Image 1 (cartoon, rainbow, N blue to C red):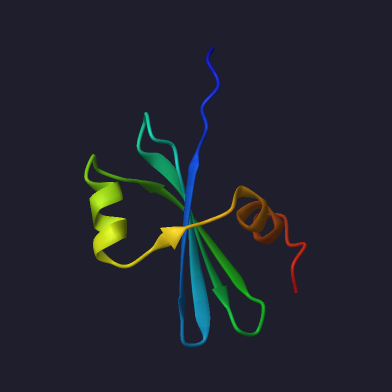
Image 2 (cartoon, one colour; image 1 turned 135 degrees about the vertical axis):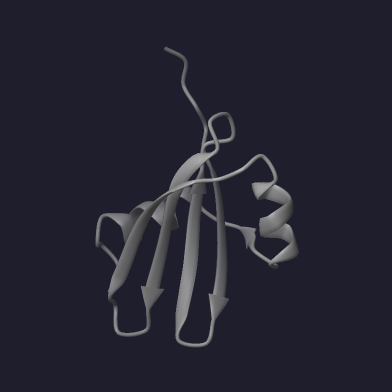
Length: 77
């Protein structure tokens, strides 16, 4: 089994932020929506091969694995 280095993206909007983790080989990943009140919605996603172009078109910026995982584990308030 080989190791995969995921890619991370984020976008901040009024009242919430979206963080995305993408496996660049299988195009599977996780999306977190973090609301201003601290509520987090987690969704498993299957993306298509154009995901990176789509994220760029939607003005997502490169994100941090640390930030994503802090929210995923509920360690950020």
